Figure 1 (cartoon, rainbow, N blue to C red):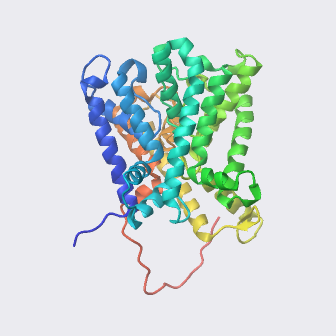
Figure 2: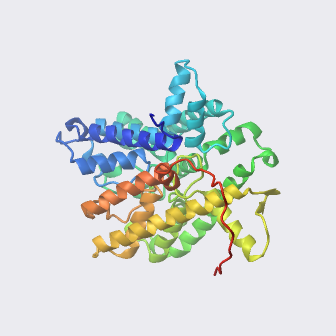
Figure 3: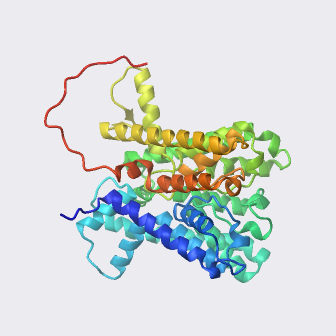
Length: 443
């Protein structure tokens, strides 16, 4: 009897197929500026990083890839950011094809929506708002880029960086001025900083939150609990992250004026969740800043968004659970609501799996890269599994085995480490008989 793929398996295999196609396209001579075939590993790494909206690179995006290659990367970023399920369903709607229950289930799984009802309407909203945000972002960035690079190139730079920022990808074309420089030349540019950060935040709060805000507008009391948690946690992480970044990185910010220091500090708190751009040399980060960045990368953005990480809601549930346990209280209460047990179990599972994966691969890379500082390896591994893209510059210098490990981590980070694990398991079966309970000592 032919076995049907589960929703998780369909999504996992779909991303693999997109990465495979992207790899083939990037290996074509037309994709490189020198007209030569790009090696398999470099093409695979770039295709994975693009599709998984990570931003880690083994070759500079501007100096290595031709306009065609850059367009392929941008297309992979857009597909990876929105999700191929969303794009596929949108085209089905456009072609007036019927959206069945199977497709609706796939939308619910890929978007992490709480219910299957209204998923088609949500897809239309996602595409509409995505186009609006990316066009507005591109037009604003063109104000800076057209005078600097000319009309044609300035327009392309505006479009590329707007999509890359909104999808939390972190790819850039600033190699034209200095390879691997990201946005460091714009560290004190208010326009570029504010636009990029706004796109990162909007893309990272999640499609469910967009929908809720669009329905209830400024009636905050009517927001779903999910929306309230996401917005509150996002605000806290940006504010506390900015303050901590400034205090930990102060010695490297002295070269900037007050405006530049404020912009760099806020940008340093926003981009690890999970965009990958940087306006300060990440290789010169202090050890404290590296630890802060790792923590922000691990948390990431919010469910159903273009961002990665364990997600803000997961972190809130874990923190509330610990706090509730310490106070010897039952149940998790927040904003006048009590969370269900399934959310607590899922949060604990996601937290543990991601932390375990990161620990295992940090240990493996430390063994294969004995000459690299452990903090560099930590940054690289957490950047990959959080689909962030921030690196101290070691990505292109690590061994082949390490690069393949990073590819695996980026893939797991995009589809979700828990989803990746579930794709190998069978459907759960309830045990006919429950075993007797016996308590053990904990702590």
